[in-house]
Length: 303
Ligand code: NDP
Image (cartoon, rainbow, N blue to C red; front, side):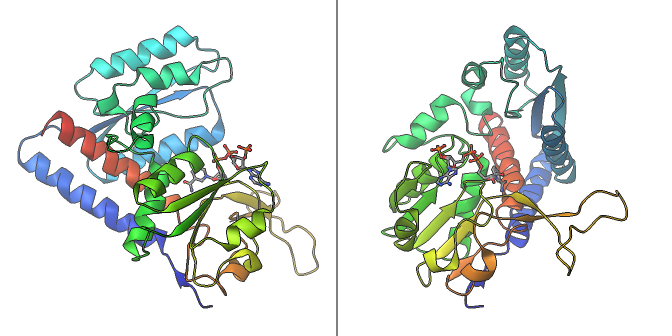
């Protein structure tokens, strides 16, 4: 292996420790505990699990979390009323509406309603708009892309002047990651499903952020020697027995799964200069940055 492994678990732990320390200092100074309100609409198991992890992180770092659930058939008005109520609640510093919302709801209208000072997910059109404009600072940036840039800086990768390629242009990861890289003075190419000759585009990348949700699509010979590779992808693949049959979990009786990224790690680690593993790379950073954003929200609202 030639690449230096970027240990997202350890870096996220450091971010969380810093947040915990700052929260304790605020408590000691008699300031209110930072509070995060989560909104879960419907009964998606993955969304409920993510919200659960966020609440657990709040408890660990000494913050309050307030969980709000609405049924899958909630009306637009019900969701908007809840957001308005949370906007007005002074014990709530950050509001996180777990996405995706059920398809009958207008996600943009909901996100637009969140008070910009409480938009700890960074998805309100105002924060994203500021991110896209020169000289305008967003109050919060989306947690996963923020985590990607944080990892690069933490291991000392020079972003200014670098050729950066972002695979994916979603509102949640790809596009804000590209905007953040531009802010950091990288020269950025965004790759999506209509891009031609993707391998050739990727070969020019000093920095690669892969966020497409395609199992190990990026091969080792796509990577520029010495490049920094940040793999955001989380893809479940079956674990196989030595004879090639699917391995079955003794505990659940179901086929075992493991998580892999959008980059073929085994190949890429022989070429890259830096690389994140999956799991243990970007994943832990997302919640760490949410906690950092929630603390920041409290600092803005109660300096
Ligand atoms: P989306 O499905 O919303 O977006 C995928 C993007 O990749 C789209 O822009 C799409 O292009 C592009 N794309 C898809 N297939 C190809 C292809 N074959 N070639 C080129 N481009 C392609 O995904 P997300 O951004 O939400 O998530 C991406 C990955 O990151 C997923 O694996 C997800 O699980 C993971 N993730 C991880 C997080 C973490 O905390 N680590 C947090 C969030 C996501 P087009 O726009 O043209 O359709």
